[in-house]
Length: 223
Length: 375
Ligand SMILES: Nc1ncnc2c1ncn2[C@@H]1O[C@H](COP(=O)(O)OP(=O)(O)OP(=O)(O)O)[C@@H](O)[C@H]1O
Ligand SMILES: [Mg+2]
Image 1: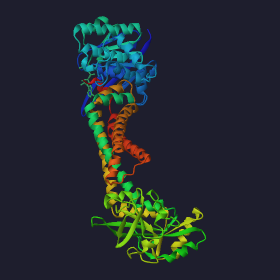
Image 2: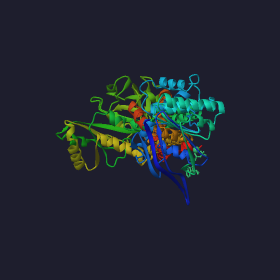
Image 3: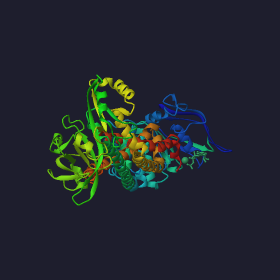
Image 4: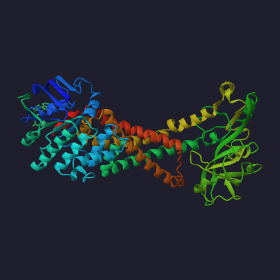
């Protein structure tokens, strides 16, 4: 299996006044194409912090993040956006959809961001929404979508521009168990079919069944 | 990313509408202030600009075109004697009282010119021709003066400073800065109409050069020889007159101040809207960053929002002015607005609004995309 992302001994320390929080403590892991990695752990164990560092939106205090053979953790603020665009697709726990954009426009905005607006961004967005089973809701605004549907839009958005790595934070937290199962299944299919590397942060026991690998975090360390 | 700017603006129609109203209002204010100022300055310098002379010689310490004092007309000989001078001519500018048919009186500005050369004559005629004032007590009044003087009919006789003058022509769109009606007549009659100027006295000597490139030398020489006069280039005299009304009287400054204030209000409205927008959508901008947007991409969104607001508001304001222009001018308010002015003010308005959006943009620079992970 091809290794796409590697985290080497990373640590994140939050310093707030006199209080020093070691959110992630010397974690190393790898992520391969076609694989779903599940990151589990109690609340406050550092899962989101770890995922942010893997997605290059948070700089580790120590250690390296390597994407496709390139050390990205020490790249400049100006270069990081290009790395994010090229390799990373994010799905956020709180969806973070644009309320002023329809489902398809929410996907389109990422396509445009990635410079893929030349060739019919709307058609591409529709295809992606079709893929996540939202073909019927493309012109709905987020406020008119259910939690599961919003979650699917965030997946379509994460897939826009065809990144190699999908990072999903608590994809089932806002969903009932049936929808949660569907959504997880969808992520797994994407990983297997399109040979993407998927990392999911979740407390959800349902996720365990479909993950290829599971890591447990506790107090910022892998157990 | 202009696409995203448009989408988000349109999504909040109420806010968009109020912002556009504000900018439209500000545009109307700026355009009328600048237009009226330029219109008034246009009238203040109209005769200088429409007289084909390179040099203006006036009484010593003249403040502006309208306040000319008489001086001996024979000084024209000194001007004509200069080899570089093609021709020199005299021009009277004075004031008088015109008796109205209803018994009232109206103060008028009187321009006396040589009808043989036509230097200083009305440049735009509705009825008759500038040479019609030749050989008698004849006068040309501007059509726009009807508001003040009542109906102007060719052939009617009017009493000006107790002398009777026959109306022989109507000029078109010639007004004085003071808003007094302008009356044109022959030089000789203007000299004597009141006694303010007097026989053998003139208000101005104007001259044309054979070679305009020599103007500096000629003006310097004339200033040296004519100690009791002020000698200006045409542009210099226009500048002197404009500066008088603008700075010395403070009148023009009032217009400028209002215009700048209006501009600032427009900028503040846009700035405040964009700022509120940005703060409300901070999370979305953070999301954009997490999804790979560079700061510049987001700046573009914010600046586009400011630009779109400013552009549309300006457009609506301009269209309003274009429609209202006729009525404003009919009401006697001078309004000078050329395409160049519309464009210049457009850029100033856009620039102001972009500058005011700068405060919002600064907030983006420090926006940490990791915020997307906090609920
Ligand atoms: N910006 C920050 N400043 C200071 N401390 C932080 C910051 N972000 C996170 N932390 C702390 O770091 C630790 C790990 O936080 P993180 O959000 O990664 O946990 P988590 O495993 O995702 O928790 P949850 O399951 O509740 O989402 C927590 O103790 C948290 O309070
Ligand atoms: Mg978390």
